[in-house]
Image 1 (cartoon, helix red, strand yellow):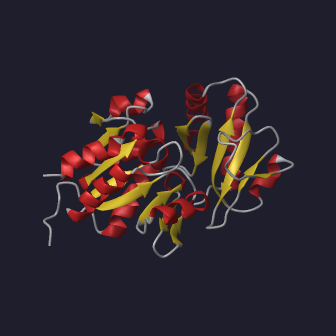
Image 2: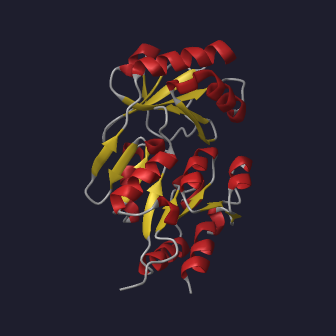
Length: 269
């Protein structure tokens, strides 16, 4: 039986972190994760993607552990193929938050990720998906976005860049929602107090581990709460400046096996 490693949990974001641009994990990264597992560490996926947008990907990677999905709103057991826990966003709070944001910055365009293993992404007229290949259903009017429970709202603005929109949204919504910036064209609202940090704390509790024993890897501001909850935060070379500034270490980019480089050093002795 291996001795417990200094880091009992390896928490990885997916897009821009563990995954390459083509949604694959390199052979070197797979070997490095296996090295960590051999030392007794558990791998935990922590992603902004909702369960329907990540389920097949995780299956294709052979991942069977827990996954924090939807910015911490969902805890998914990939091995069992079931959602363990979901936190939904109150539609009245979401509607009020959108109104406050629009009072500050003018019209925004919204989409929602529905709750559930088969939840859809619905987009209102004018909303452009940041990744056109991702599946989405069009709604005729904003009111249709709330036809079923949702875990988060995605917003875009025709003129403001993501950092400015995220800052304005954060200032406007107060305790109606948590605001995150998770990628190009991706500013999101989720239930207040729910983020990747809360998600990883819940997942660690399910695994009987202390999140302070986790080494975490990420690339965007939505990974900041995860870094604050974990013992050691590693930003990718391609990471947003805010995350790079908050990291304990900056590694190589997701295209250059930055996760593997660190895991080989930490678990290779």
